[in-house]
Image 1 (cartoon, rainbow, N blue to C red):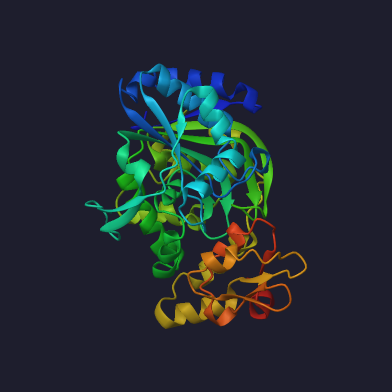
Image 2: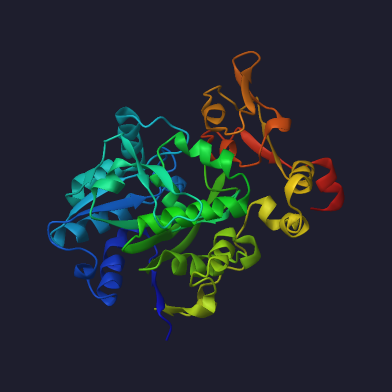
Length: 387
């Protein structure tokens, strides 16, 4: 037995989510292990953008609502919150987010609340190795503890998004853009995420993998994938280790685990984790589809290259966003979310245009476009070399 445990609970649909979560939490020692009477608990869901539950972009409201009920039954108050990517942090934006994702209804039914406070505060991150201070959304600072309610999804930039990546939602709206600009490669961005999850310190992490996402995730360009599973752990790294193994993401393509290992954190390998409730070999999905850049051997090719040589090769070989003008509606979400200022609105109707020379390949535009108007294209050299 290891010191890290992940509980796997089969769950075919969201109608059974509450019963499945209750059973798993009881096996973990009961909700009283995680909540004390009178505490306010942040339910940090993955709410990337206002998207309906069936799109699998966001944590499902049935999962969030079930956890809110458990918190309330333990004598605590459940506060549902997140900050959507690429959006101004305003009350109207948050209200629309919670309504479209089903969080508002889940809160009403479970006796919880959604946080409409759009403010953020600059705070110190005393344990941070890359970030020593950051603007953090108010509910994360005003609650007594946090539950990390993430979604199993692929991610065109980071390979997958799970419990650790969900901590990026602590950063308010458009402020996220600056972090992509100052930490433009996977390894450096993974360090940011580790600092944020170290600040967040979730008491419990729950991964919604009932309806997961594969393909060109984590936004509208991804494809829902029925997995029928809930994963729980008191350690977010352990949860991501097991999720990555189930999805079939090679460890070499998981920058968060590589960065964690470099810091001496544990666990970063599945052998260090005890899986409770199932056998890993029974959960592995052999045909889980990943983004094209994850399937390629680009990272192995570029791995030894740093500095100017690395940046040059990244520009020549990696995928570049391109706007499908026949689909673009000119909403400018991509432009506002671009840390490299590589997107302008031009031409008839104000369509978006990506300028490759300024693009840092963070793929925020692809991630946040609600209309699937941004596609990722390999360069001619990358195609020639089969990368």
